[in-house]
Image (cartoon, rainbow, N blue to C red; front, top):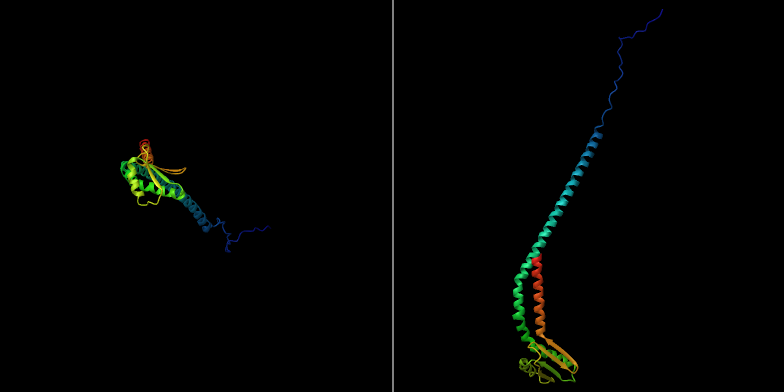
Length: 197
């Protein structure tokens, strides 16, 4: 006889554990989320920094351009306002100052020449209208071998001081003329620059 083997249901049954899905690693998920968030934040910060830098650079360039324009405009207006004052000084004030110091300058030049050329008399050639003023200054020191000579070819702001072969020229008229020309040229250039931008 064959025996039949039947399963015994009376005994407690031992069940095989079900195959569970692998438990997820919460720490790993958190790290990945943190890294993704950090990278996104870093990218946003870099983009914001680049945008901020571009905006600041543009604002700075605009401000510099406005300042440069304002400076040049203010300078042009100032020179335009000062032009008549400077011209008046060159035409009226400086000639008076030069005329007042002309005689003293001639005498000082003659004294310096007398020191270096002691063995030779010093001749001062001036226009006739300056002779009296120079002789008045020279008379205060009679020990100098000076001679004042009139020269019709010289102007009121000119003198030639000579001793032997050495000759010094004093030309206040020429200096004032050169100063007038330089000032006129400067003001003309500034006016043209202002009109032409």
